[in-house]
Every structure is written in structure tokens, then in C-alpha cells.
Image (tube, rainbow, N blue to C red; front, side, top):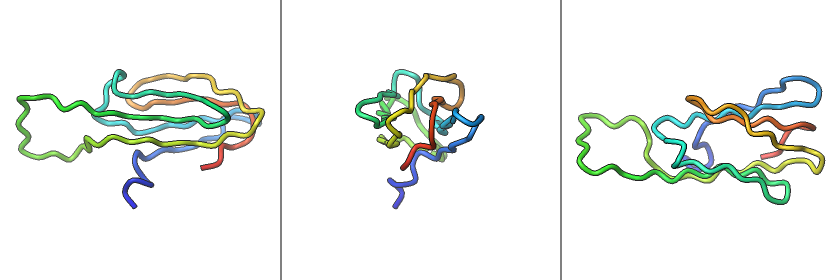
Length: 98
């Protein structure tokens, strides 16, 4: 079940024809995350590289790889959004289906 819910995300309606997907990616760098769109499927993949020499007293931030996919309607165009603490993409059209 954990694989189906990781990483957590929100889908927000910005207006009639625009939506934003926000994904919580704590602990990942830009180089460890790839965003692709192929045949109406938006894929977000994360590959965590372990840094040697780190000693954790507590490790609460997940370091697992993931592949989250969203099925998009035929007329949805994906426009890369901001990449801050969360990764976002904005699409035009109807809501993406999980």
C-alpha cells in the first residue's frame, strides 16, 4: 500500500482549463527526479542516490525510489512549472485521472 501513496501529491484546479500537480519530494535533488510525458501519461520518477559517509541518528525522510504516473485527457498540454521544495506541473484541460 505504501507504494500507491508515495510520494504524496495534490491536484489543484487553477481555473477552468488549468490544473497543477504538486508533489512532496523531501530529500530529493533535481538530478534525482525526472518528469516525462509520453502518450497521455505524465510520469514522475525519483531515483535516490545514497551518499556514503552519512550517519543518521533518526531517519524520518524516505529515501526510496518511486514512479508516479498520471493519465491525462487527449487535449491536455503539460507545461513544466516551478521546481522549489515541491515539483509542479500545470496542464490545460480536464483533470488528470490516476
